[in-house]
Amino acid sequence: MMEYDWLTTDIPDVINAGCDKHIKRFEEKDDREKIVPINVVIKNIQPTKRKFSVKIKTSLKLKDQSIEWKLKLKDSYTLSEKENSEITQEFDIDGNKSRDLGLEIDTPIGGYGRDELKVELTIQSEDGINNYIKNFTVVLVPVIKIAKCTIGRELDIAVDLSNHAERDKEDRKDNNVNTENEVMAIMSPYEIKGYFFIETMHADRIDLLSRSIRGFRGFVAGDIDISEIEKYLTPKPAVSGLEMGSFVEIVEGPFKGERAKITGIDAAKEEVTVQLIESMVPIPVTVKAEAIRNLDKT
Image 1 (cartoon, helix red, strand yellow):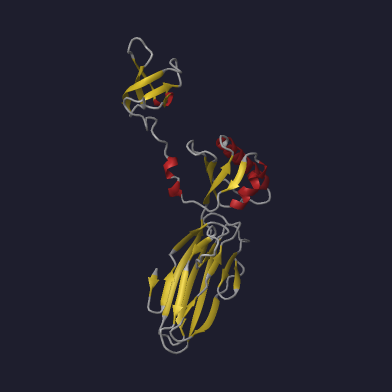
Image 2 (cartoon, helix red, strand yellow; image 1 turned 90 degrees about the vertical axis):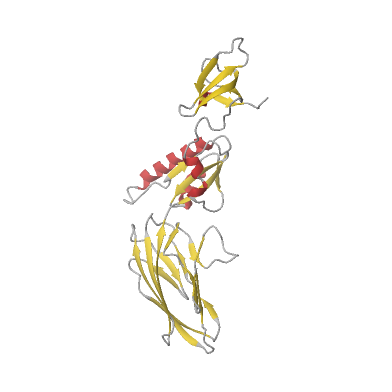
């Protein structure tokens, strides 16, 4: 946030936002799922009323030229390749009073990844004492949604959704050469029960595609950041959680079903040496770490 004696502003150089998002000053009553906050407050630091002007110039970089953005200052404006004129507004502020600029931008529902809206915002007082220029860019990026589903069928439902999205892409290809798969990525970690993750540009389209999939139960409200699921992107070593002296059950191979005690761990090879508990002769057996499961210590 930048603060001057006459202006408080919090607009980053680049705002990454998903489709169908509202970019505006955040208020407690706002729908948190769709709000990307920006803040511009002008203060007249003189004791008498003064006039200020706001000018906004915009430019668009769009994959589909028919896509429209929305901008609101005092009035609402449609921004597109055909409608993109300079926006000007003037207003008076009483002495020692402040005014929220009320700048709002709505990203389009059907935009494409890396579409851009460039904005040049100029604020100045009529007497020339105060002047401020800010250039920033709004970039459309995918969002990550948490899908709810029947416990135990996470992977099956994720695969079904992926297949539906691929068929949907093929069905739409003839009408739109820019057609892309609505499911950009999908992940169903083994550790997560009843949920899986979807990366998409158009969450509303995913909601539509999933309605015929048995066991799909909608989305958890809001988007999540990639940092929240990074731990699932890199598989844990198979020996993770295993300790010397722990009791395990062998679940694969010729000793399947046997209980054993861990006597050695080779993390590099992801192998474990165990001693069979019920064996009359304590012969060490080396198995892959995936071939055992932990039992309660005794």
